[in-house]
Image 1 (spheres, rainbow, N blue to C red):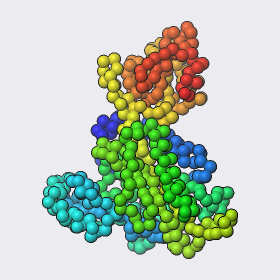
Image 2 (spheres, one colour):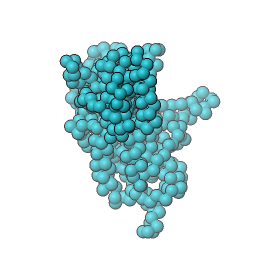
Image 3 (cartoon, one colour):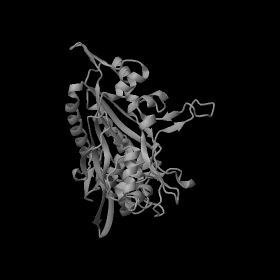
Image 4 (cartoon, rainbow, N blue to C red):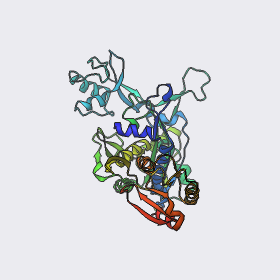
Amino acid sequence: MEKIVSLAKRRGFVYQSSEIYGGFAGVYDFGPMGVELERNLKEQWWKKMVYERDDIVGLDSAIFMDPKIWEASGHTKGFSDPLVECRKCHKRFRADKILEEIGVPADEKMSEDEINKIFGENKDKIKCPECGKQNFTKVRKFNLLVKSNLGDFTNDNSKPVYLRGETCQGIYVNFKNVLDSTRLKIPFGIAQIGKAFRNEISPRQFLFRGREFEQMEMQYFTRPEDEMKEFEKLREYRWSALLELGISEKNLSWKRHENLVFYAKDAYDIEYNFPWGFDELEGVHARGDYDLTQHSKGCGKQLDYYDQEKNEKFIPHIIESSGGVGRLFFAIMLDAYTEDEMSGETRVFLKFRPEIAPIKAAVFPLLKNKPELVAKAKEVYEMIKKEIHPVVFDDNGNIGKRYRRQDEVGTPYCVTIDFDTMEDDTATLRNRDTGKQERVNIKEIISRLKI
């Protein structure tokens, strides 16, 4: 964990938000390397969920929505975590997580009475993570929606507007719009990547749990009788998609939800082996007809589907795939982190698959004080940049240090221009994973980098 967080800052992947002012808890900024990795992960997800499917289309709904949407969905009353406060240091924590840390299973979906009962039974074992005291308030439910004063000119907060707590509600309320403006027929899906906001009680574990994050969600609308069949197909599809990104299968596992919300048919999490153990990376859920039914009641309009072939109307059932960009980013960084020995020294490198690597290739002149090598290297750099991006040019420091810098950010290949290049138009192509170097004709470099 410490190695990843340190590397993430040092090499420009992730910074603490507002760091020069002391930092802002639960919010992170993606640096030059991080924004490229983040973008590549989102592109790969979109490719898998939209471009490779004929039955799924995209959407980009607004962050601000009518407050009635959050009432109809149940978020204003039921979107909460169990909060407990230390009476000594006044720090607040999630009660379910404190219980989990002492080996007592708990769930945020439990009622206040249920979790207070468990908390009370184990109070002698529970210490404040901050000050170590054993003096807590009663557990109470804390709503996670982030309020805004958008359009509120009275300052009385009587009709609050919210930053969206999840992106899927924007999909549900646009179900009819998408249906009416496309030629899609059930079953079909709507995919979206976008910001979500939660007033987390105790954001922690780096990118795993934050207050501002991006979600990648796909809601798939099915006939009621086909829901569970499509659910199993989606589970298999998402598992294989994570493996295609390069995540080791040994670091993934399925966890079935034991405490389902009342409307759910089934729910699984794909868990990743984070530094603290297996924890949720992505969810695949069978939600029944709850969402469209609730919004139909809330807006007073029918959100059903008419099947012309069977001459029948029904409320579609929904299965969803939902994951956070930050959690996937974190898992990919952890999975790619590798240490080996090269030239008698410990080497750190990120073993990204080339398609998601922040930098696809780096071009070096062997020596920066030889104008002819620098000029040739820049020529090769410009040639590669037209076909493959991003590519970087680096002439700072000795060649060994340059290789190590690129290894640490996961660059798959380095191209070095040396004196032989001036004679035979070949360059040294170095492989990140093996350190192996080979001579390649400059005309062939682009095709080699595209492999």
